[in-house]
Length: 120
Image (cartoon, rainbow, N blue to C red; front, side, top):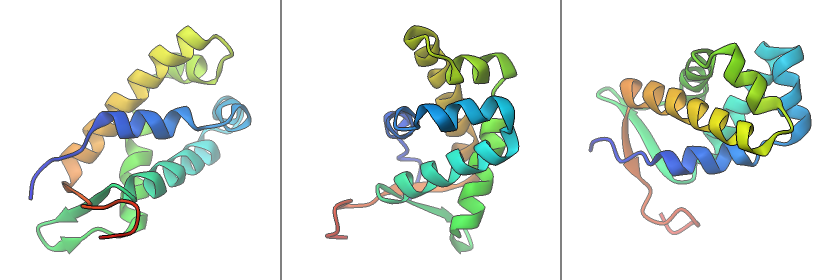
């Protein structure tokens, strides 16, 4: 067991976030952060198992660590992530990926699921 987390998986999930939810990060950051974290946790759970030395991590704990990571993203990057400019959104996505990655890396041991499409 170790840290097999790939930041590209996080980035892919963030790129799936629709415009309305990104915009809600500006008007209701707590609610939108929770929604983004739930989306990320469900996406990541298809590819990874998250563990502590004491065992498997609950989905609630995974969501909370992602929320904590997103709250480390500066407000200026959140505004760019929510904006219409694709280049600015891409750079802000990278900032968010980095913070979520750091939060997950610090909190959990991560292992890749052998077959993320249902084979185990």
